[in-house]
Length: 163
Image (cartoon, rainbow, N blue to C red; front, side, top):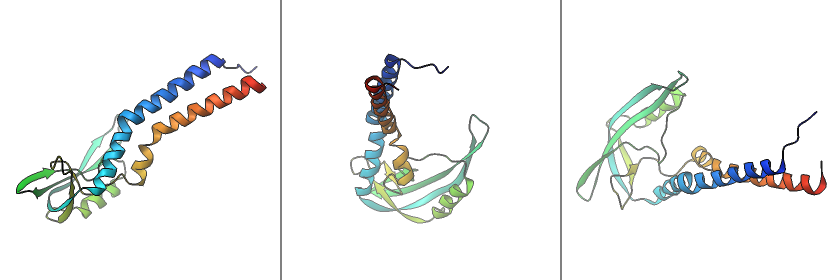
């Protein structure tokens, strides 16, 4: 015999999903996405790569994780800055070849175009914008909101028309 979930429990679960997704979007991922989009319009200067190496760490599951350790210097209004941001949202990956390609792209001594925040010139990236994958990942909290709305529609259908 299949146990039926209570309408109240489903409604509470849907509300928690919706509020949690909305709060995560508003206070965490939306600002990150907005800054990434703003970086597309930041002014640029020439910079030079000073460090370019592979970082290797282990995650909690014992898997090797890789990230690019890239540092560069650039000058804005006669002041020298140093930064390490490649993208607005950087991270590590288990795909070593991807990181090796990044290191090859930003080899030590290479001249690069640096996008810097005009209000805070110490904030800079080499690749502006969020990129497709990061843009999708940063919108995941909105899926929680959509899922909760579908739960409420399903609950309403069940209450009005039965099973």
